[in-house]
Structures are given as structure tokens and as C-alpha cells.
Image (cartoon, rainbow, N blue to C red; front, side, top):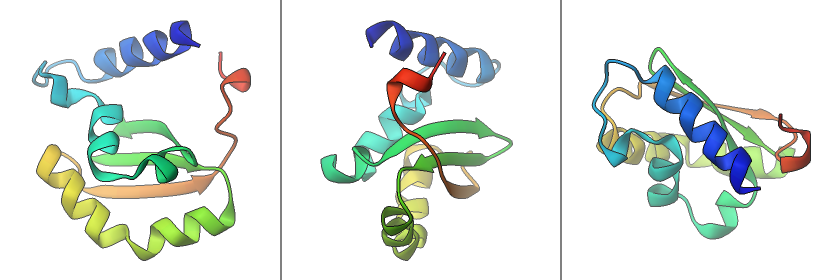
Length: 100
């Protein structure tokens, strides 16, 4: 499980080339600051490109719940990283076993 996490972080760092290298450049770090532990258990970082932060959500109910808070979440995320312009959520598998 740790190897996957390290791989994802490395990929994110490569995508972030040319941007600041502070610990705040990690989308997982931003999400941990604005979401509850329960919410974090139902989402997974998908990508961050061109100002769009995309998340996978494991159920329609959780996607709906997070969409109700979308504006507040976006504002909080923008405080962490001003480069975030949009927050997208789609249904998807968040389990580690399908990640390679």
C-alpha cells in the first residue's frame, strides 16, 4: 500500500513541474486539511491539471453530499492552493487493489 502512495506522490510531483516545491503542492495534503476523516474514506485523488482538481467518489450518495458543499470546499482548497480553479467529482472505484 505504501508503494502505491509513493508512486502517486511521485507522479503528482512530476505533473507539478515548474510550480513551487513546498509540501502544500501535494493534493492529498490539501484534501486532508479541508475534508473530514469520514469524507476522506469515500474519495480518492484522481488528477490535478490546468487548475482542475478531480476526485473519484465511491458512491452517488457521497458525491451528492460533497456536491452540496462544493462551493465551500472549493474556497477552502483555493486557500491552500490558489491554482485550483475548479473541483470535479465523479463516481469511481477508490480501492487500492485496482491501482497500478
